[in-house]
Length: 191
Length: 234
Image (cartoon, rainbow over all chains, first blue to last red; front, side, top):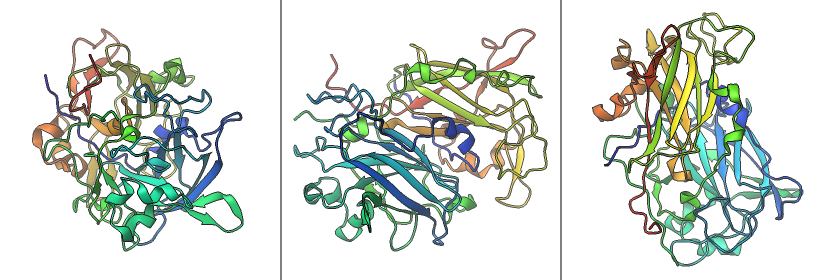
C-alpha cells in the first residue's frame, strides 16, 4: 500500500521552546579524532536584516568519512563519542556558531568521493518547509571535483564554501542569505 | 560502487512551496532563486538517530511536568509514524510544542494578552515503539491572534517535528483539531494546494484512545517519505 507523505508546515515563531532541549552547538567531545573547526555566521533575510529566530541542524560524517548510521556500510571506523548531529540556534542578531570536526570524504554519485561537507537544514518562521544546504571547506582541492558542487552554477558555488577568518585558522565563516544577489544555494531533495 | 536508493518525489501540490503571498512572513524569507536539484548520496540517506533514553519519562505527558496540573481540557494525542511504503518507523524521535489552553506560548516574543500557566510548558518528546506508535498526554491548545492580516487567528494546533531514518525524511508540521471553524481561513493551513493533503493535517477524534473519566483521544498519523526502491534489502 502506498501512502502520501504528510505535508510540511512552518515551525512558526515559537519553535525554540520545542527545539531547545536538544540544542547542540558543540558536536565534539574529547577523544574524537579530526581537525577541530568552529563555524560561525549570520542568517539574513531579503532586507539584509538578521533573522533572530532561525535554528540550523547539522548532519555530517566523522573524520574518517563514516556516518553514524546503519546505511553507511563502508569499512571505516565509527567514533562512539561522535554522532554527527548538531542543532544550533541563532542569537538575537541572527548569529550562530558551532564547534565540530572537518569530516572525511564520503562516497559520491559518480563513483568518486565527495569533498568534505556538512549538511544543513534551516528552520524558521516564514518557511513552510526547511531549507537544505551544504557547507564545504576552504583550501580543499577535492571541492573542485565534487559532484554536487559542480551541479551549481560557478558564480554561486562560493555561497556553499566557508571562508577563513583573519587570525584564527580554526574559525570559519559561513552565512545563510535567504534572498538577493548573494543568496545561498539551497538544494531540492523534493522536500 | 553501490547506488543509493532515492526517496520518492512528492505528488504535485502535496507539499507547500516556500513563497506564499498570503503568508506574509514568507515574503522576505523564501529563497527567490531556483533550488538546485541533487541526486541522493550517502549524506542524504543517512541521518541522526536517537536512543530512546534521550527522552525523559515525563517528556510525553505535558500535564505532569510541574507541581500542579495545567488548566484546560486534558487530551491524548497519539498515532503512528509510517513511511510512504506503509512501514512503521520505530525508534524515531517525535517532538511537539504548543500554546497553553489560553492560546499563549511560553516564549518571550509571544505578547498575546492571555495568561501563562505556571503548570504548563507546552513541550514534549517521545520515541516511537516497534510499531511506530507515539502517545502524548497534553491539554487542548487555545486559538490565538497573529498579525498576518486584520483579525487573523490561528486555529488550535500542535507543532510536530519528526526525524525518521534519514536526513531526507526530516519533517516539521502542524496538527489541527476536527471541527475547528478557523481552519478554512488559515493561510498556513492553506499553503498546501492539494485539499486532501492538507486535510490530513486535521487529527481524528478517536474513541479507542479516549480514556473514561480522563481525556478525549485524538489520532494523528505522520507519514514520512519512503524510498523508491530498496535494492539492498532481501
